[in-house]
Image (cartoon, rainbow over all chains, first blue to last red; front, top):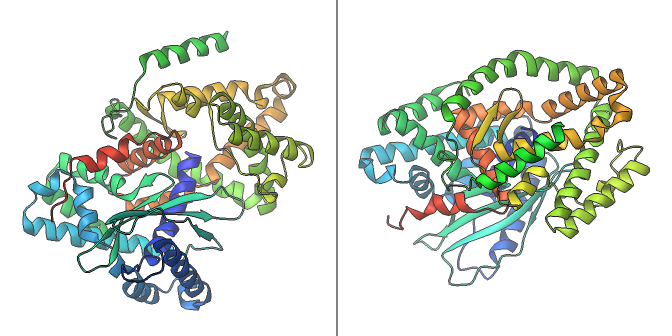
Length: 208
Length: 241
């Protein structure tokens, strides 16, 4: 129990830092991992110095997310993977609703996690990706004083526009997509795809 | 006698060889029972565990909490070393034993974690992972009230660790007050180390039970170098958009 709890604490922080660190352009000569590290540093600087973020100002945090974070996620791919087999069964309208609600849920999670950041050190590992790779994993470690380092891996896919986007974050071996996949499956099994959409919507409309 | 019984149970468990099915839900064949246990657990968490943690954190200064955590981590490191050694993970075991020696001597019986200051990493192994190394899979998953998520394998490992622990050694066991104090502190320490993050869980999970199960099983599979869940997650999904 202890272990899992320590891990969930890192989940939020890692998600934020991970997502913020991903504006990787395929054209630049800088390697993906060097770029991730550079952006991580920039972002840490913003979080450290912006008093509004530190105070948990919801509006400011939301701005930061919209500017720096959302463009670097492939929410559709994330939702598809989290749905698994059920994705094909869903109608186009249901698919749109699912992507929208899942995205909202994740954003809510991020907003809460941003203010939890302490003086964690993020160590991005050298990437072994080849130039023609279209799907890569960037590995990193979050080091918090007095605690064991937690590995944080980001799965990225190269979009048709030449931008890398994140579709999964794996914290200490726990994949966000796999976790939600189990959760979503359970909801669909208990009810239907509409039932899942309703659960997500209710969750998102509940207290912040 | 109990030790003999435990060893027998362990071998039985290994013989059964309940390998992972690759599906998180299918590794939980006892789900109805586990869910019932989870239902019992929830109010205990809210009305017993949280208040205990709150009191513990109020009456114990931060430094005291750190010392207590270090003390129990030191015991865990000892088992991590033994487990690592038996798995042939010599680097990790070496670090763990080095940590125990430094922290037990200079660190006053483990109360000060000099080894971490000296950047000696923790191996984070345990008897459950040793059983995994010997072929025991994560099936069946179990949820135990107060203790939380585990598996038959990890639970067996934990029971073994409890019996072998210095806390059960005669010199401590015979001093009932000391033993009870240490056990109480151990429980408070374990609970406080993360109970508040369950709030985060409430925000992100649709179904708490499922979410905890997925996270626990994935985490343990990762620690045991078993990637069957990750592979299964992506295999029935083709690239088509």
